[in-house]
Image (cartoon, rainbow, N blue to C red; front, side):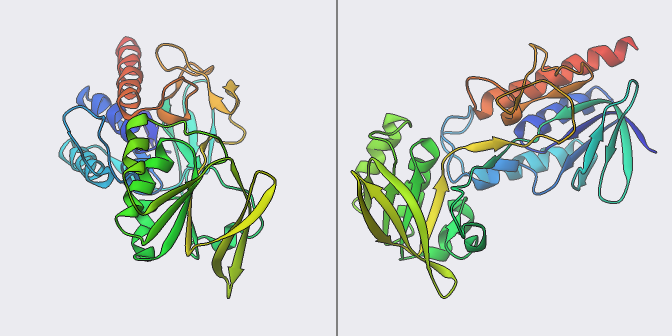
Length: 301
């Protein structure tokens, strides 16, 4: 079984930052990502709050991170972690086809988009339901679509879709938005975006296996909204490995100031961690913090 000083599980900005610091400290590491490096960045249409970039598309920033991983010769594996078995000395990580181990682990597994949990939702994925406007928006060019949500993501992706689609309707179950005022102002300036406040999505209606309309309820009245696509932005759920006995708070991982979990040789960073603010800049900072802590501990062993 191959052994590492540290295995980083998750190739978003937090995991990649940690891997850069660890590799620069000449530690034996492995970065594992089940999809594309950059993680959630690949599904964000525009980023305007990250230092050094006035505005950058998420996939462009993700590609820059990928190039940095390559230029730093960081060992990278595109694979899925099946399970983690904490051990006293080396933690055992099971992949699809092999088992490896590491003295330290960094969990940078992020969050998955939360679903509406309505009948037929899973079957409509790719047939009218999407959780990524950047990925699927072009399929609905010049068509009517809706965005379901009330936060920054819903507003940002509605703006993106408005430049592709004929008309965008935002279905917000609250009486106001939870997102930035600047984003809401930009939405309000778009002539092809309309907003339904205090509206709860009730059902997904189909025709020949594809989404045909959304039934929603507003002020005790039900109505149908005909759309070709519905983009869901109602929050996220952290990706936690089942059976991993670490302390959680509302399904998020609890960490200390060094990003250590309740198992002191397992660290967690990024969106999987319980915190008040979820931004790229603090995710990168957390990756750095975890890496430095591990480097210092390895140097003492």
